[in-house]
Amino acid sequence: MQINLTPVTDALSKEYVYVDNELQDAINKISLFSILSRLGIRKRSGDPIRQVVFAILVWPLLPVKSIAGFCGKFIQGYVKGGMNVIYDFLKRENINWRSVSTSVSKEVYINHNLGMEKESAFCADDSIKHRRGKKVEGASSHFDHTETRHVMGQQLLELGLATGKGFLPLDQQIYIGDKKVQGLQAPFQDERHAVAKDYQCALKDDKNTMFRAMLKRALKNGFRSPHVNGDSWFGNKGNIATVIELLLTGLFMMKRGNLNYRFQGRNYTAKMLYELVKRKMTAQKGQRFLTYSLIVELNLTEKKSDPPQWVKVKLVFSKPRKCQKDTWVVLLCTNPDYTIEKILRIYALRWSIEVYFKEIKQNMGLLKEQTGNYVVHYASIHLAAIRYNLFFNLMLDNGSLSFGEIRSKITGQLEKLSFATVLWELFKSLIHGTLDRFEQYIGTKMIKAIKDAIDSTVENFLQRALQMDDSSCQRQIKAEALGAL
Image (cartoon, rainbow, N blue to C red; front, side):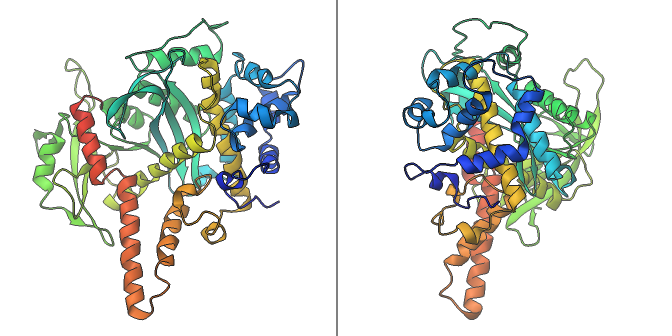
């Protein structure tokens, strides 16, 4: 079976065009209903569970804006009971959607030997879904790093596995901030249910505590990678210590604050160390980034009353050759033997989680159910990951989509590329897209123009991926000044 090469967002732009066949094939390949049965998820009366779950999975992929729109146009083709059947199922508190999502992820992981990939990393990041309305349970005020201001909404914390084949979401968790919190309209039926425990975690734990729990849970569930990636929010002593305890190598972007590093017997902040090395920074072969590394010591003890726990780490300072004064970042690697090139290459894998967020927000129905009910929100974040994994698995089964085959169908716009295939596919798409602009040239002039364009395009892409461009650095500085990091 060959998957439809038309990206979902394009395929569904025409009225009465369905993705039923692709979704059904994806469900069959992953044995989704066997997973549901194994987890004890059943339906005693009314429409069969297969039809209800299929309707819940398919509606965001159809040309509708809401479940109500789906029910107005298409629902009779899936379930007989109408919109209430879908929402009643989504509101079931006794369904452990995290277990379903994890089981689907494990099937993809095993099917495609993702644990054997040459380079991989557990990647953690968060994303905000803006949501207004006084009845949206679990909404609160969050600092949006993109807009550099506080907004109302729900924040999703994600942990996944980034490999050469793509991004595999492993765990999802809603995080509720401590300002303007909108609580539950009614208590849970049973505090022992997974969604009730999830809500307590969302309300009481901070993101770093959540991240550590998710990482340990991923390892317990059998997912493996030697590396852990995180941006500057996750670059702190507690997370670094946890990664070392788990015998993994951590690669974190660090803040420019008052954290002290010991170098040559003296204490320095990141800013002070940058002043020492900025004139020594040089470009790696084939790169326009200026870099310099130092091996320093970091005391992982957080309480002054506790004995110090010094560990050696490598700091990599990096900035573009042409940049503003403050456009520099510092990455920390818990393995001092790693080269600069390897550190940057593995850290760059985290870009795939950014693409994943964009995909599930735009195409996979993340928190698009028009309800304020927290039980539905809990289901939604895991269902978005399940939809993504179903198609990701199907794509891997059928081979990666080549850029040439879908070039004309996506009108040359990378942002329309559906399902967010592997990081390398994205690079390749950028390269091919650049090459298209230089078909008129010949000889030496063409070769030089192509090389320059490729260097510039990929470099700019990596700067954004590594949050090393001017705008990302300025947003980080502002966030630190506001105490949002």
